[in-house]
Image (cartoon, rainbow, N blue to C red):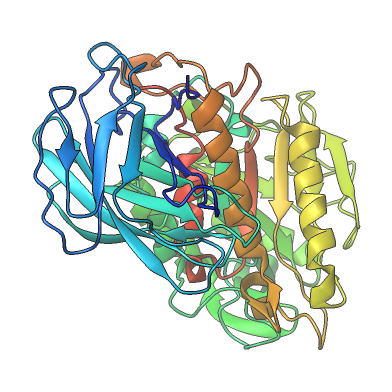
Length: 487
């Protein structure tokens, strides 16, 4: 019997054709894509793009299109199981997946309540995850899909189908009782560094704080200097990346955060890491006297990692200033070695552990594989403890051979960090779709953080990204990692 596929992810696998198998076998394991604990009857059909495939409910017969015959596998329990294994035997071969020539097949998914969605997945030579091209549909909820495309030696294609989670309100669907450290949280590195291309920029000019929050970002890495005459209380904090003026004053940053948290993001929280680029003492005094003290009630300032409920509607301070023995407020790192090529950790006063990977001086693009291995090492190290806060910086910068845009997006044939993370997360979700147990719904229907295979979510981590929007599926996929459970 085919393995079950039990999560909000639907997974599709194909066995590549060979000389002895001209018609590849497709096994589809999909269930209702909504987050409700109900099983819905699904109808699937495959055919060439543009074909008109009639819809008929299974298991009352065989659905036949212009290029395939689709039937329910005999061992499936269609009426009682949310998992519906189907076997497709094409009437005509779809071609060898090892060929560079691209071939397409249309995937039609019919859902209850009334609605359907249509997308195209394609066979051709690459082994990374790509978004499935949507053609049409009137699905009763938003959806999107990703797929693998096998290498010449690969034998399977996988498709992940997701119901869309609103990036502006994704935390509202998570339980208030869970510690923030138990979630997968997308963030940005040098969140305000939008000017000084290509050496100083880490985000696109259009990626304002408001745009980042709307996209689902929940960790802001803020670097500032105090500027102006007189006492710190008479000065202002201006964003800098090294010596580059990033053209925004910190009050404008806070205004965008308040607008979000007072509006659509009232159930969200945002971590703000504050770091001085020069003169740490003046920066700290200016920050506290001008910005923090007048708005203290809007911050979570205790020296511990809060639960989500404690932090909803607030900013959480991470204070990267002051000495190792100081407790200036919030989560305060006692150590932060410069570009450490390893994981470093410290214990905060609550007894909670914080583990961080921040190796950025990679030298050349040829070292991005080493950088990614360190990111995986951190995930393996702290993934078993929901109370350990994990912070993974995906950025890198070494002049002149590995500047921030090339590290994030790739260049000269090297895969960038964002695409590496996308592929890794998608593969993790694929594994979860095969093996994850039924998860209970939390308070008021919220979805509890999923124990994958009886352990904590292996993607529970803050991922701090450069140029996050240049890989459009990355942030939605990181958000999706918090919602892997049976409907």
